[in-house]
Length: 422
Ligand code: AMP
Ligand code: MG
Image 1 (tube, protein in one colour):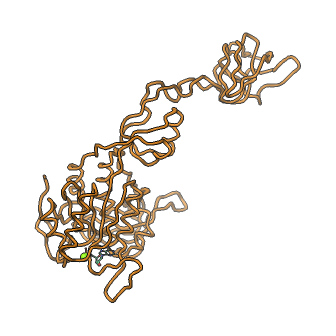
Image 2: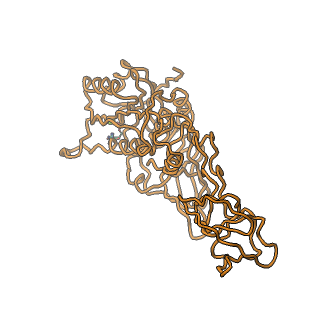
Image 3: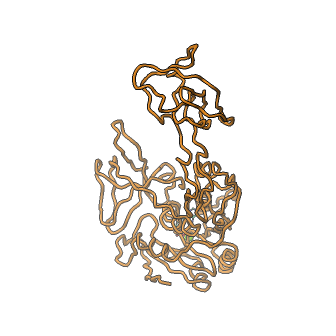
């Protein structure tokens, strides 16, 4: 393993710590180690939304399969179009979508045609019905038309043998429609990955249990479950693990037998009265990092038997931020996804933001357009790592780079909109 073990500093007060690992470096080290799972399954197209394609999909047919009319009107020969004045053509039949006109069309003839109907033999042009005058002698058209107009050509969307979707793509509703248009009823996708998670801390209670003095409800398992569901992983909720040696060992052992990835929250900062670190030392190869970021400074990453392990901080906002920054890209890679990273935007900051130099901060904001079409962002109240409302009200992170010390209203900041995951 190419991890670097860093001395863990017991003080939480030292905001600038030269031994801290940069967030980008932590992401790079994690991504470097993780490879896509080799497992796949064949599933019905109807169940494939949000799944990751295992192999490229090639079309066995042309789309459209036949040259057809884009409009309701009259199919005719482009050579017959008048260059000036008007011209009258005999209507010799009708072509319906699904019921083609099977005869051939000669000069001075035309066929009534509906949208999607194959162009009859001999024709190459469609005049829309609004531009055709019906007379006793046939239909009369004028000189405004161009040969080849209102026609959709066979194969103009997709050629036979063309790659329509690449391996590693997360299937969207449009992709599912595209596969259906090719008559593909089954797709080969990466298998789902299983992620087991548990919370650690004697102060934590589950919903339904009474709150004695000094105890709090466990919310991290709920945010984790939500984010895992959105990313398309199978989640295994192992509950709250009390700070007891045997319980902690047992939880890690069990998680490693049933999951590809184990995520814990709490217990990775210094001074924890628990056994997380002790268990990890015995069961796996895990590095404890102090990342130069806020929220979410402590982070543990490594292997426990055959599973990847992420030890996230306990604070509710830190859990979400570290999941977004570190766990999400790792899970996507493990799942086989190769989509590019989400785009960041530049916006005018409406709030005064304070921060400390020496760490990247991910403050929570609301991104919107003002009346004049300018993108603006405002912070969502107090930015403490335990204040989950700051996350709940937000639709983006405001990313404040390492050396910045404060942001005045009116300055431009970099914003990362939450994709569909938060
Ligand atoms: P820790 O990282 O374990 O020191 O926890 C940091 C803070 O987050 C403490 O105030 C904990 O009570 C709180 N915390 C830890 N785990 C959870 C959880 N699962 N749900 C809500 N708060 C938590
Ligand atoms: Mg704790």
